[in-house]
Length: 560
Ligand SMILES: [Zn+2]
Image (cartoon, rainbow, N blue to C red; front, top):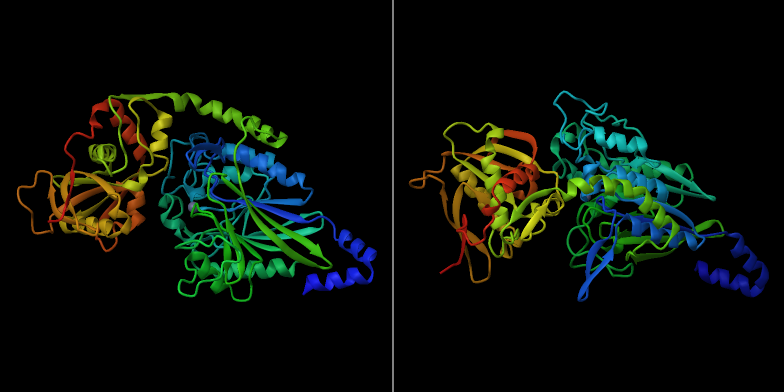
């Protein structure tokens, strides 16, 4: 209707209608991305029959320069998980990303779950002393606070509170902000996934509440932003939807499979205080669609994509003209001044970690696979390293130790020949630490059943273990089940109540992958010792351990 009205006006008095539309001024382009995960240089993206360099914050800067060259007014937003993932960003606890974002001119970021990974200042310490509190470099969020202090933009989340309901009071942190530029007033409200309590190091967030009044807090911020003149209002959310994601704004909402997941529940709970657009993240996936009519977009991960959300003034209203998704392919060297500037400003960090990354860990006599498909050699070696280091968890005497690692913790194989720390980091990019708890033989059986019940277990073994031997049988339809378990040193299967000391990543202790669902595991211990470091030491001393030809602790056969 609006377009039609303008056309009629143009017919009646062409020139003045034209002037009117010109006096509406430049349009607004919001450039947005999510889940950069510390990526500075391009990653090798698999396309068609080969790989192309893509993503990384340097290439992203090139794409942002293109956006600015359109002469639109540009506002830049990141939906969270900025820091953890690459060697150079993780070792410096995110500092190079802040440096890059200062050069780029980022306007606001949402707080993602992984923003809490680093704990106190210093790569060597992951969690603070129990009485360290929240202030100063040695506090629970020392590293994050340092990044917030040096940033030129706010960190946003409306649903992070202290357990007593108060605001955390971090520097440059708030529920929402106005980005005012060239007559535009963009309201931005942040949101952090309620999964954060179990998807970062728990000790770093155990005094925070992400859940209570989450939707009400977001709705209140949207209301305030509108009342104070913001338009458009953007929900910058480190959260996503479940299931198959929509890929078009026009995609008719299929009635047999309505959108579901955290963002759908959030929007439903907002009532009449709705944002104009949602920028999503956390799932590392492309998405373009509508949640209850509100446009939503997210752009994969690691700077592989940039969303351009374009608004233009139309008389006194603001029209959403388009949402475009731009693939960020990398030019080497960078092709714009901004790209070159970001490259120059991040170069010292790349140089600083080069020595650590290049440090030799071991020399492998053969390939060490990590995927459980054709042998669990590598993953099993990690479990063995965890079992060998179980003493740091103070296991009760005379109780069998079983170590278990979730397959998702291990991301790449180690190749034959020299293994550098950087290779090890790629295999094991997460800051997960050694934990333990006391269960029983039956508890352990339940864990196996939980793990095998996940449909993904039909394709890949979901864990590797040490300290026990198990046999898994696949039914004709591929579904696996446990047929036998034998603890190391066990003469005959016990009644089930025998104690077992379970050594696992803190991720599993915190509910990750659902392994511990319904399992009684008490006397929980968190060591703060990275499993990557435990493994580095064992691998350095025993490179021969990783031999896929050796008998494994897990036997897989077809059910007969
Ligand atoms: Zn996330």
